[in-house]
Every structure is written in structure tokens, then in C-alpha cells.
Image (cartoon, rainbow, N blue to C red; front, side, top):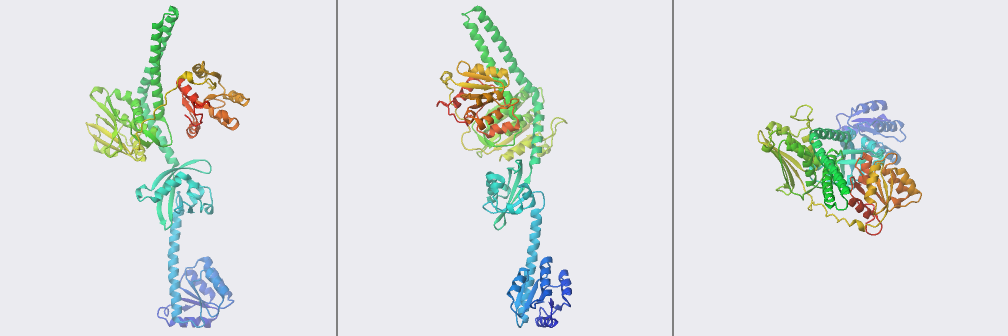
Length: 634
């Protein structure tokens, strides 16, 4: 213990008192001067320092200020004979451990004061060290870290979080998680710190930054890291997700190469039927014209050929739509999905490829619905069906089989089974079959991500994918997913009204393709007054000049002014006419246009359209009471 004082006599008195106590008598020493005391305190050479205070002592005051400013670890105990409340308050603010006003100090009082000061100093040093360790861990790394209370209010944030949310540290304190990651993100995080399952404390969040950029975070939560706070960690995985999507798209394109020959066959065959049927229709109508009024049989034959042509065209349309679903590069938005729909799409996409290698057997029972992404589920089933086909050599299709089934599993979940009678896999291959970049194919036939992507997609939807295989006896994949309530069957369609009951209306048709304008006009003429334009700018000018239309059929992708631009101009200037717009689209969307159509409440019909489709769309727009007239009707 070190003793320092202005008056050497007072210093000796304190040393004498200390020598009377067993725990203080050894190691007590008197500083030769204030500078000597300062040097020893800087080195931390003593367990405690007793400062004998004299009113007005500048040297003692400077020592206390230096100890506070430089953070010396040795605790200071002030001993004085006179009351000085102002000096005492200032000293305690500077971190003095004890202030003893004693006309006659006893050894027991001095020992107790020293012991308490040393204990508090030891505890404070330990707490400070822990605080520094926690702060270093909290601030370190490239992850945003937030301390939040049960109500979701931010109590602290590291530098990365402050940079991510573009707010100073003080401005983040008290801010609600809902303001930072949205109400949905707040609810997801609150669910994570409320769960008792340690394995379920992670989730993916998409957050809109103040700059407008959309960022994907992998969020994890440590509940009750402090008694009233949870630690929320946000890892920016946007680039990783973008890379995963690129790799996934690359793998899908590799699979698409395998499908290419079969797709060409699937498209060219119905097109050939269309061309032949049209030729036959022309011949029959030519004969009917030559023969005259009594040509009923020839006309009936022509109509029959038109039915065949229509069925073939619908086949082409299904092929194109199925291919669009398979190649769609979306962000994984989930919705209720009737599992039979993506499974049937995958079967149609792969049927031609499979047919040359095996007999395709289907046992698809409708009705099971899951929460998932239709495009991703389609891609999973396409990968599994192609894997089954590629496991079978060409040339013995009647002797091999690829079987696909959809049914309820024993535990109530829904199960899709894809099995083949191909060459099978060894146990070593089965153990690695879901590993990224693992493949047994030749170079150029895929990068080994297909089954890895399938595994990631299925598990992200709360399901599991299992494989059973034996060399020479084939392979079976099982995709098991949790089901949603309800039957999952599509809603009953409202019967299409008789066309003649649709009230006559004034319709504006806008499309940059003159042939499309002509076809839509011909479908409507006779029932409606039609104005047809190929330039959206001209259409906007006519509406702004005062012309009004009951329905506006507008293409989406057009040069100079797109359908979206036309619609937004109407919303800003003639909102009543904007409510009359029906988008007629061929599906060639940019990313922004797709987001606009999917995010807003807009009426959309897809090309090719029939007269029934057009008239049904008109009924939903017309304000005469037969249609609902609401912009959200699709």
C-alpha cells in the first residue's frame, strides 16, 4: 500500500496506523513525492494508494485527475480530517474508491477501506475486460449485429449495422426492428428468439435498404445473451444467393440442353398438324365456294379440321408455358402450390426424352397442396426425371420403366416418388449424390449441381429428399413435403356467359404488332365498337384529348412507350380510364415489368387469347353491373 501526502508528518501517521493491522503492516510505504507517487501508480506497483487530503492541495487534485484520465488500475482512498462536500463530490466523480473523514483514523477502518477498494477494483477490472472482449466480438467481423429487447427495440448496434442501415450509433438506439427489416422481418426474428429449438434460430430475410437496393440476409438469433436483450446477427448473403441462382440457372440450362432434342420434336409435331390442318381447311372451303350453297358436308369437314388445328395449337401453348416455368429465374417467393401441377409440368417436359429409354408410368393423385415455389418444384422434378432417364441406356425402352407417383405418406405428409430400372448407384456414390459439384457424368454434361440444388430447394421448403439405390437394380428418389390444409383442388371456374349477352362497348386495342391488332379486332368486331392503334403514345393523346373507352386492351412490351408507361400516365392524369385497362401480354417481360404486374392489382390475359377470354375480361371491366369493375379482378 502506498501513502502520499503534502505533509510528511501526516503521511507517517497513516503509515503508523497501517502498521498496527496484520494485513497492512507488511508492504506499506510512503511516497517520497507526488511525482514518485505518480510514477508508481502508472506502473501499477501497489495494490492501493492512500491520498492524505489537505484542503486546497493542488498536487492531490492533479493526481486524482491524472488517475481518472489515464485509467490507472490502482484504487485511490482519500483520508482527510475535515468535511469538504465539494471536493468529495468531485473526487468520487473522478473514480476515487473511498473518501474517509476521520479526525483519528483507526487501523480497522483503514484495513476495511483498503480491502473494499481492492475488491471493487478487481471486480471492475474483470468487468472492464469482459466488456472489452464483448465489444471486440460485437464490433468485429463483417456481420451486422444488433442487441434488441423483447419489444424489438434496438439497444445497441455495431459499426456494420450502422453502415447497413445508414444511421449513426445513437440514432439506432430505440429504433424498432420493424423500421429496419420490415414488419415481416421483425415477426420472423421474434419467432426465432421465442423458440426453444436451437436448430431453428436461423432464417433468410430480404431487406430494402434506404438506398432502395434489396439485400438478402441470413439472420441468426442468440436469445437472452443479456438478461433483457437478444443478439440478432445479419449476414449479407446477397452475392452468395446471386451466385447460387446463377449456378442453379446454369444447371437448368445444362438440363435444358438434354431436353432440346425432345422439345424440338414436341413443338414441331403439333406445328406440322397445324400447317396440314390449315391447308385442308383452305381446300375444303375452296371446294365449298365452287360447289355453292349445298356444300354442308365440305364445310363440316373444314370445321372438323379447324378443331384438330385448335387442339394442336393448345399443345404448342402448353409446351411453351411449361418451358417458361422451368427456365424462370425467380427469387424463391412461396405460395400455396397444388403439387400435381409442377409434377405434371415436369412430366410433360421430360416425356419425350424418357420415351426413347423407358416406359413412363404415372400414378399422380391430385389434391395435395404445399407451401412452396412452383418454378423451383418443377425444376426439382425435372432434375429427378432426367436423372432417372439418364440412368437407362437407349435401345431397350420396352424393357425399362420410369415410374412417378404422388400420394400421401404414412405420416400425413405428401410424397413424390421417382424411380427407375437403370444401372443404379454404388453406396459410395449414394453417399455423395447430394454434394455440390459431385457428378459421374462426362465433362460437358453438367457441373454436378442438379441434385444438390434439389436437396437445398426441398429442405428450404421444410421437406426432405431421400434416395435408395442398388447397383444393377435402379434408383428411387423420394421427395417428402409438409402439406397445407384443404384439398388443394383448383376453384370451380365461373361458367363463361353467352357472348351475345355481353353489352356492346367501346373498346380500344393497343399493340405494336399489326397482325395482333387485326386478330383482336376481328375477335371483337360485330359485338363491340373497336378502335385499334399500334402506338401507345397516340392512344394516350386521344384519351387525354377527351376520348373515353369502356375497355382498353393494351400490350405490355412495346417500343417508344410500353404498356406499363401508358398505364402509369393514365393513373396520374385520367385514373378512371386506368381502371379500364386490361393487359394483353405474350409474356416477354423484363424483370421490372414482371415485378410491376405481380406486385400490383392488374387485370392480365395471356396470348394467345380466344374470343371467350376477351369477352370474360370485358365483363370484369364493364361498369353495368354484370362485371365487378374492380381493378384487382384478373
